[in-house]
Length: 126
Image (tube, rainbow, N blue to C red; front, side, top):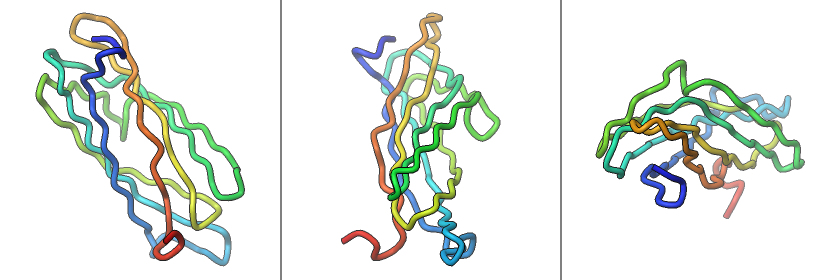
């Protein structure tokens, strides 16, 4: 598996968590729900993640770590892995993007890009 013929498809949905937010203290909480689909012909294990989070003030956070939500899942060929997590930013609008680092069953490492996605409170972006 190489990044030139990327078999891993990542899709994201987000939601604003008003109950966990404190706008008066510049604290805006969001959940993001990830679906990772292995469209390749062999299994792949997700080893680590890299996120780039940017709020409307252009404040940038980078997060790197092993696996996701404490797991390093093996995603079989044709399989899907889903999880949810969260992030807090200081503005009502921001973006996230990044990549997962995986290793194929052939032992070759590769990255799966995560395209930029929007974090936004309701009605903040038309």
